[in-house]
Amino acid sequence: MRVLSYNIRKAVGLDRRYNPERILGVIAESGADVAILQEADKRFGARPAAIPKRLIEMESDYDLVDLGGTDVSLGWHGNAVLVKPGIRILGLRRLPLPGLEPRGAVMVEVERAGLGRVTLVGAHLGLLRRWRRRQMHALSEHIAPEARGRTIIAGDFNEWSPVGGFEPLGRAFSLVTPGRSFHAAYPVAPLDRFAHGEGLAVTGSGVIRDGHARQASDHLPVWAEFAPAPRGTGAG
Image (cartoon, rainbow, N blue to C red; front, side):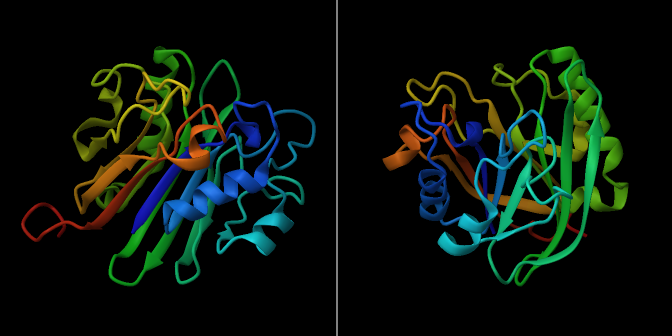
């Protein structure tokens, strides 16, 4: 299963144009089975969607996971999830996170042929490391111990260090850093990442730097492909 993580900056590109069609095109070209988005809703008022729901229905091959709980938002605290048909939704939750600024995450349990049951977590962590640490600890607490081995956390971790700052995730999760994804015009920081439990293996990962991805947002999208971990490596 290919999972995409993409901070879409409310569908406003480097050319300062609001262009949700361009964002959907980048997602479609990625070949992702699941797209986990950040900044998918505007921050104020009713938090309207950056990509109209009707546009997703008419112009994409993805289904929107109903995380917003309103008619206008795609997700919660800007975190949204799109899935290809054939991926079964088993459950979903909205996860509160501590922070000086409003932050939250989303959790979606899915099932896909060939992979089985997986818990997906989408998050956009804070700008200050001390709060990111608390938020990662909170995420870990929200995930049931029996589900951690089959969990994928994806999002904008806002961590500039290539290795530090992820200690709260502990030994239960392995970090995947596909590459430098920010700033899209001149990528210098690997802000967008994945973490996964021991029951899953990563068979490939990367940063999309081609086509409209270079201009559609200030972040480049990142992807990782997951498969069941080989027997004897903690898959159970």
